[in-house]
Image (cartoon, rainbow, N blue to C red; front, side, top):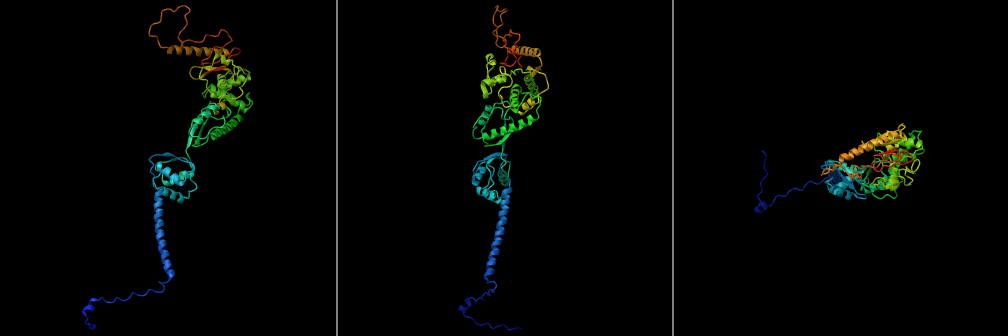
Length: 419
């Protein structure tokens, strides 16, 4: 049995004092090494940075990949010379993104797209993520607007249409030469200058005309691409039906071969109004014989240039017309034309059309409220304007007027085409 150490009596004051705690052990010399201290600090900082980077990566990935606020596809215009902050403001205002502008800017830097953002009009898809939005702007795939230039317009009319379209900018410095623009459907981004549009239409016309001229019927009396465009413009104005173009072209080609006047009303109109395109009223009888470089009732052969801008189909039809002997055509009352080889047949078709028109006019006259008198006074004039018809020509060499309002007639040789 071990002996306990004797308990020494303590004074009351000594009993109240705490016992002395032994000093802590001294740190080893290795722990006090400054390199170890610095290393521990660096390691700690690296751990903190790694944790921060991981959290940032996770947050950034979620921000970039999360669906955006757009409820439906939307087109937004990014103005030229807009900075990253301006782009962020535009996208936020349009509801494409719902993040802080600085988050957008940080995402642009993270995707290394800082210098690749392009202005323009973009289509953003429904719920597009921030990554998709930035990629769309970087790719520069701006919205393309489809613009249709109808066949048969004059260059002045086409320029007017372009001037009225707010998709384009700038002004056209000069009206293009007639027949040098190709009517077609084109696609342009917003902000394209009107001069650029004109240049594209001219380039398309040159390319198409060269292709068609290479495939033309070599027996044609047309001697140059310019003559092809001129005749095609007349064909374009004479008919809008695809199944008739080559046959209408054949009539004019046959007349050129036989040195007959073309006698086309649209050429009279162009000689009167030029690039304005439309006369707005029937052709007057005095205008049929009015001298004009474009009046094919007066001049021989083709006019000095096109009277409109023909489309591809009319160019094709004129370069390769139907193989017929037709020299005349007239409207048939159903939207098409009746074609004939001789003037006698043509005159019968004209008479048939006039009778049909007269019947239609009579059918549209409303009956009077009071019954008409049983007999009109001898020699009384017909006061019904809708039923009145021009008197038949007394000169048997003159053809009867066609069904086209204001259609021309001439006194030396049979007319050709009256729609």
